[in-house]
Length: 185
Image 1: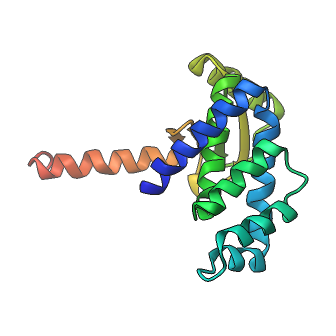
Image 2: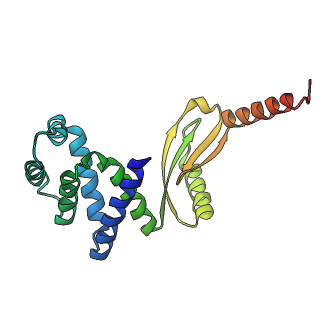
Image 3: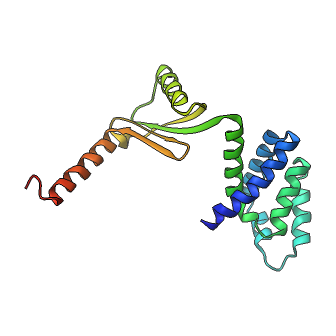
């Protein structure tokens, strides 16, 4: 929980700076690149986490490793290292992406369906989600056979469960509640 709160503050400050300078997309890409590079490099993670390596040395390593980043992004990643917050980078990146999407009028959705959707079904679903949110929707589709039938949409921290598995679970809850209240015994 505290990770999220701290990550939100850092992301909001970086986003405001990037917005003022017209660098929203550039910084978003840079954050993702830095996050992925640190996640993929065990040696770099070990150096950043080592308590006996002084912050200036760690910052120099970051400056050398990420010289291709825009100066705004590079200063930000260096700041995280200096303040011993480099492990917050995944959460900061996620929160920054959310702020950037909000600025763009974009909502990301994850759609799980029991069978692969056709292009026509995807288009209809996307239009329905755009009407519901009033924003442009970018959906990622996956197949989950455990749903039995139907689909589940995760849309901006909201879940729309139109699956057979979900309906059966809700029916089971209703029946359990009815038995608890003494109905149907």
